[in-house]
Length: 276
Image 1 (cartoon, rainbow, N blue to C red):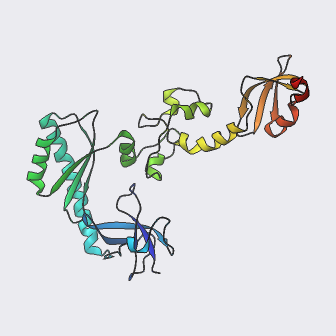
Image 2: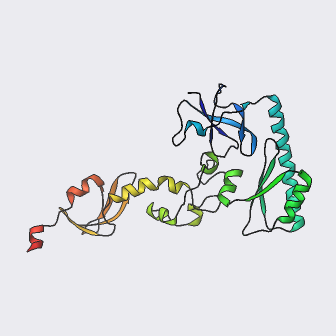
Image 3: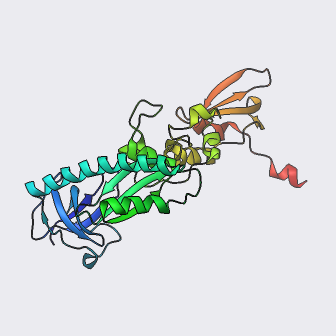
């Protein structure tokens, strides 16, 4: 079997798979591939010997060829064209008084299409804008509305942790994040603390949720009093990282105990007495 390569057309874009035969490529190489939209220039980010899960060999098209210096020159020209299109589109937005925020412009490798990514609080009638863009660039124009999460992914930013935002660094799709996740993780429900630079709930809440869910399944009910060998103890909080419970005894003294010791401390109800 020939090499299976995963490529990206955009740094923060999805990974698409192709067959490398008859070429031999390495991670970091640039290749030309045929897509439904025409020829595209992509960077190799993965090289596999086996088929990715969920793919059949006949589903994977071969790469067209390796990129050469002329292709890199075209790429640089397209980038310059995208910068100019960005400026021109912003001028058109002001002219037509459209409530849109232009985020990015993508020029296809063969210039068969130009995509303008924008955000907007609502629906926008941009038919006049499209006419202006088509008149100047004489190619297919697409205006694609995106959300604030995708905007941050495209533009990039530093998160509250001081690192590059996860959406820009490695995330390729957005899973739902809910306020319940923040509650389950015992976080202060301060919007400034649990929201990212996009203004939405932090994506990393989702990364850690499975660990908290598994931990909480092992916990006794918070706030409940349990009869133990030392008397009655009320469970007041738990610590995932230390694997401990904090309990309050009958004298009002807090104690921290290991979660693995809890089941041995709690006295099981006497079923015989209950049946009587």
